[in-house]
Length: 340
Image (cartoon, rainbow, N blue to C red; front, side, top):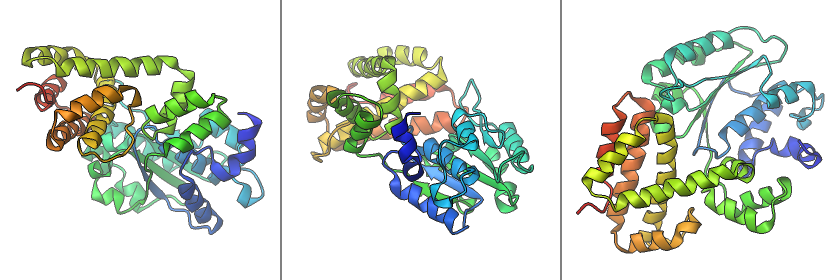
């Protein structure tokens, strides 16, 4: 971590564009009103885990001055940052399906109930909680209803609609929206040493997701994968039914990769909807502006919205059920325009 980030850490927690959320959690700590359960909602890579990790650091920071927590430099903060703190627990998704299984949830709940090894609080951060099946979500109810005094549970999710009401009603919900492109660009330029042009480009392509922009700055292959994914979608739109079904058979073999692809396609269809409705909002995929505009000119807003909804529905289906990926993908592709 460089000196510039260290200096700003107490104010930002390393979070980009969600200062209000940082301030809200800081005040809860200063007023000794921290909750035992939190639910952070927002798009993939928008900053949910960064905020959760910053809060875990603040809860256990060794800095004596409360207003300076987390300091980012003490031994506790450094171990949280490196992922090696014994009292900060992270969930692990199933390697095949990407789902959060009930056994994993029960294991984390039992560990969370134990006294901390050395910290003030034992914190469990559950990623992609909206991909947990209802039975797995139910396994957390006792933890939320009768929490240990030293425990804090932080759930991360993209879609609150896929989370049981009994979970949301027992958690403090924090909703993170996409971050302004200008805010992301400034962070890339000032904190990650990118030039102005590259910062602006990555910020626009990120779709309001600082995490994606930061990764793309250091991993050029992400940009290549993104271009290949969008090119594949363009090709699919020109295919007939047989061509789309053949592509579905190939894409469905790797469920985790398919979910990543669908997340990308979701940004594509969001852009088409914005253009079809002449909203005036800047599209995320700026390098595909000409193609997006041409496609939007040939579609009604309803047709574009139908494709966007089909993509979102499939993401939800594959994330929360054991549905046959190939068949579900075929159904989605039938809802995409271009077959008539």
